[in-house]
Image 1: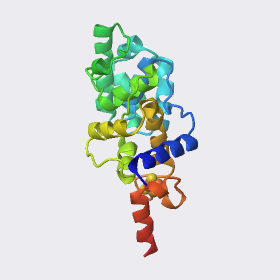
Image 2 (image 1 turned 90 degrees about the vertical axis):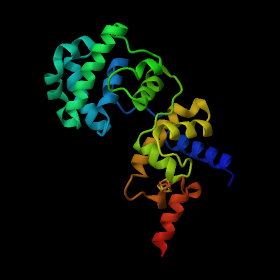
Image 3 (image 1 turned 45 degrees about the vertical axis):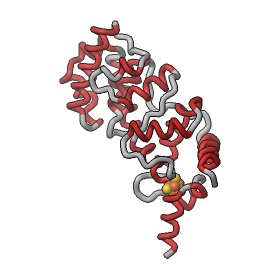
Length: 216
Ligand code: SF4
């Protein structure tokens, strides 16, 4: 199968399997989304949603989070992992936001990544999910599937993102980002991918290799 056909197949299958994917993190404002995405590093979305439910009930916006302070914030996010650095970054990011942007999360990717604790992946998720700006942020699931499916050989998230952007149409980037993550979680986890029941098997080099190994 030609690469173009393979890409179209993956695109169509993922769209069929996970139609109209909803962002998994819960939020009522762009600021809350930004905080939730920062918290999601090395933490499950389910855990983040549990944590932010209490946090946002008590401190829903930047003024309230800043008033909470780093130590009290740690109390809310303690179960999220890396909570010391996340608390520090969220307070610093919030102070930046209030000082330079009147508390409004900027729409521009380049402005977002200037905020403390906001890297390319976080900024990509925020611009895509909050502002509908095309972006293809790469997390660990997307990196793993892009390699297994033979879509890229790149090693860094930025280069993988650039390769995926070249392959898929721009209007599909935001949904595909979520659809690949969902497929990674449900069918193709890091350990013990379920290739035998995977709808992408016929175009997946790693899946075919792994089934051959099992056959021997
Ligand atoms: S065939 Fe296997 S390795 Fe390939 S995407 Fe599916 S589960 Fe993952």
